[in-house]
Image 1 (tube, rainbow, N blue to C red):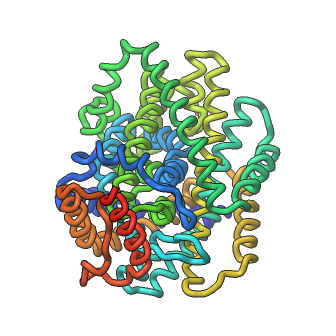
Image 2: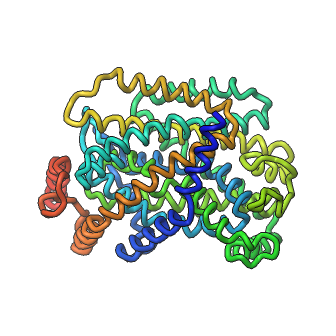
Image 3: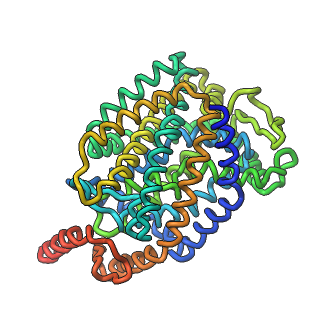
Length: 494
């Protein structure tokens, strides 16, 4: 195991180096300019679309898909990931997480749109995501299959374990419940939902996600209010650290960028394709609609939830910063490992043991909903291999058993090993997906123009695939178009 982890550290170092930072931020900026910063100027439209989607027999409503995306984005990375970013990149990493949120929203807009554009109906359900737009958009079937396999293995071997590990660690620290007992509870709760399929997953997400995110942000606002006198100095620390001006930790500006980007990408899922399966299953009349909804979910994740975590730790001085030589530049917590325990320490400093228990419960819910989303993504990627033919029921049964087994295994691993394996695997997915999105971005620009032209004409936009000669393999949209066109005619008569 040790040799595998060491190899993962080496691979992760190459994949997540400065070239990826340039690729990610550069691509996001180019997308934003080409789309005229739609992720900013259409904020009102994004919120409106959240609640205007329709229920579907073949997929999810727009809000359910949004909730499922938030379930994947708002996870243990919003707590453990922010702590890790500050530990290795300093407080300035939080600034770079904000930058990633803005450009990442543009990337997520492109990703969500193409996931919708190239979705297809398999076994009576909408399926979409990375391998589907690679196959249908780029016409690269082998790469699509490789990506699907890599996605499934990454989710099973690293992501489920990572989130389960964080959940079990937080619960054990606050309630003294052994990790293996927590693991049994986790897989039992997961089994109840995933056996019910996408409908039950979507139903659980839309009920649980708003509560968990709202409660967490409310707690953060209380902590900020109790320490409001610290706010100016904390904001100054974030910016001076981010741009290399802080006397103690400012020299790590490049490290702050790398760790801020790495953990923001992990937390928000921007560019990773892990949120694209939920985007592809939504019932909407135009691909741009779900692109906007997915874009807005980035703001919820990073600007709100990640910022809440960062401010709680910084305003209570519950953080450490490690230099590149492994020596502490800032040591407020002794040898306490970076992760949920830092946030628990921050809340315990304000609310005694109650704060730590709150974080443990939130970590459990965050991790649980994230694993649900990751399972759905894996099931969707597996469906790629059954396009045009009937998928045997036992295939998903086997996937569920394997998924639950590795989720339990993750609860007994060390956190550092899981993070290192995760970085290497996610790096592969991110590079492939980002290159794919760059190649498909022009189509999204055309779709946005079509959407805005219909809006300007006073119409509820409907995507007509036959109006786009240069966008092929979108046959699944013909019956969708016909259904919405018929509805438009009825509304016009009324």
